[in-house]
Image (cartoon, rainbow, N blue to C red; front, side, top):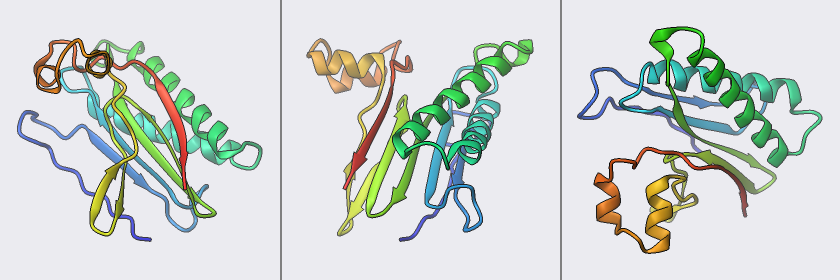
Length: 171
């Protein structure tokens, strides 16, 4: 299995708000991969994405021996959320900062994926990308209900509102 990380500032931002983590051989949990995308339009997205990953990895290091992977991912996301929330309340320049995040762990032929927001996970098989996640956003909920179209969702004023966390296992 190959893991590669690359990030691009995109067309709209002045600074890169993305962060990623690829587990090294000596990492607390091998085969752990994380992507976080600081929420555009909010303060300090790059601080949020980096801080979320740091809190996530710290939680994994502390709990990997005592928790099953789904619980470990859930707890790590909660720790990341608390860390970002606490820091957002620590100084005016961090007010309302946030990040979306997706994490995957490969263990014994299974892939465990957890995500929040519109950071997505895909599985590449035979050069075809297959989505493993669905956006957790207010507008995706509206699309699922048939209230708006995907095209309307792309420009909806509430398209960046996150709704929940999801953990799943794929074989």
